[in-house]
Amino acid sequence: MQKIKAFHEIALIETLQTAMNPSVDGWLLASLIFDSIRPLKTNSIRMKQVYFQNTITDENHLKRLPSSHLSANYSLIQRFVFFIFLFVWVNSLNAQISVNNTMAEFKFEKISHENDARYSEKISEIQGTPYLDKEFISGNITTIEGNIISDVPLRYNGCTDDLEFLKGDEHYVVDPKTSVKKAEFGGKVFSCLQYDMNGKTQSGFFVVLTEGKAILLVKYTMRFFEKEPAKPFTDPKPARFDAPVKEYFIAFDGAPAKLIINKRKFIDLFGNQKDEMESYITKNKLSIRDDDALTKIVLHYNTL
Image (cartoon, rainbow, N blue to C red):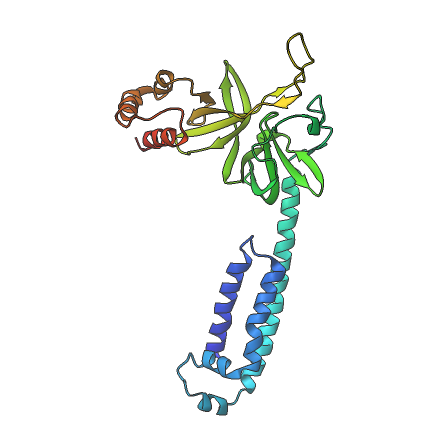
């Protein structure tokens, strides 16, 4: 019986470890458990091999061994699985309640995907797009409270600096944006951070390129232009979104991010490490207008 008890203890530990994984669906886990033990009743040889820890390999000998105690223990396993399933189901229910509470952190502002009040024209009548990716892409949101909302259809509006999500056929804006610590979708990581613009501190979404004591960021902006009537010698112009403007920012130790304007001002941002950084940039002939080059520069600084 000690061997059967050990068998139960091992199964309990492994199953509880799996059950505590929030990415595992409770119903799927229960199905897998039942499927895994079903052969134990129909194939007593396998159960006997477990019982005798594979010390007896002759199947004919195993068949002749009494299996009444194994059937009894199979009944114990069934009851064990039932309680594990109950535990997983309650755990899954609590997780769902947690997700709903997390969603309550936001005030989702409903928007019309045709008559959007943020623009003076119907979306279908505006040339171009305000989105980095026009289609919604499944992703995850991490809130400033540390809660995670998974499998949310997301897209970023670079004209209004909004994170939008899709629920059914309805479009919504995540509000307030400052509740979002990061949003991961489409191979990018967005974070809502403070930044300095013309001496004023604002909050907005950035794509994060590096992390550490210095964080390299990219901000995408799409400007909206109203339609223009015809003028002498000039044809009318339709309402339109401009092509994305890409700007680089850098943030140090939690301070508001600063725009990278030119090489000299960029180097000055490194303070007492600016001589080392200037030497590194010059020696490696790195540009401050390139993702890869800027990433190398900031990663080097983070090692100092």
